[in-house]
Length: 118
Image (cartoon, rainbow, N blue to C red; front, side, top):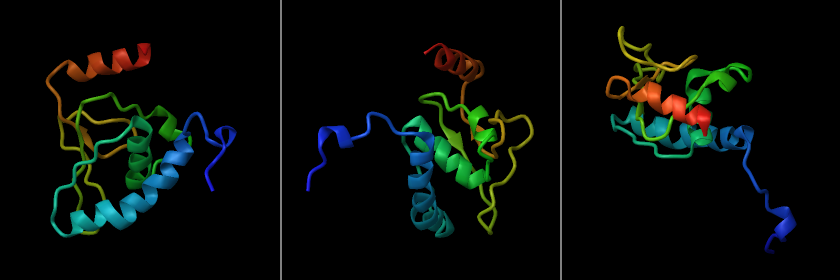
């Protein structure tokens, strides 16, 4: 039962990514974190934004303001109830999120600029 070429979508929406991200978070990533493990997620921007939407409970409108530049790690820390901890003072974060970027000074600004131009 292969799909015909016209049944295969050419793109994937943020909504598609978020629908995939919720079970990934609930049944995979969060369980590993609860066990005390660190989890590294490497994914496409919209998949990462979908995970961020789930983790931080970001609204449909606010997720549009969240931008993830390529190749700059974004780190979350959680309390014992798996609630994301707010960013430490002085750390660079993203609008509507609790994670922080790990970056050299100036690198994030340049990456975001390039992302907007692309």
